[in-house]
Every structure is written in C-alpha cells, then in structure tokens.
Length: 61
Image (cartoon, rainbow, N blue to C red; front, side):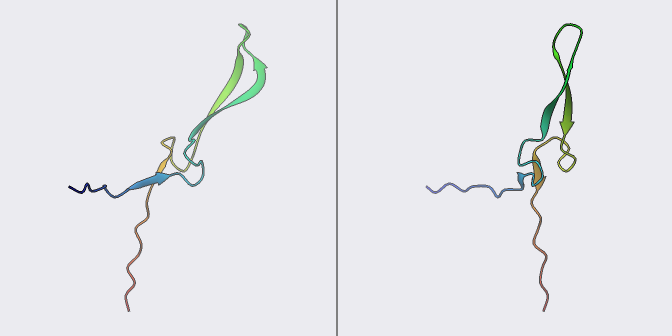
C-alpha cells in the first residue's frame, strides 16, 4: 500500500537559514567570570526558523 506524504506548508527561513536565535559574545565578563552574551532573534521568522510557503498566483489569460 502506498503512503502519501503531506504537502509542506513551511520552509526554512530565507534570512536565517533555520538558525533563528544566536548568542553574540560581547567580550565583557559578569562579576562571577561568565561571559556576557546578547541573544538575537531573526526578525523575519520571529525565532521559529520557518516561514510559510508562498502560494503561486493564478495566471489569468
């Protein structure tokens, strides 16, 4: 029996390529010696790593 594969509705974000959240080292240290980092989230996908597929527009003759 053949199995059907559901249609994809989402794809990896074009801007972050599926890596939506990154930690950037600032070079500074906390008093306990750990590094200070900034957490940056992709503005396009809002941290999900996925964006919806665009539906092709119908061409009318």
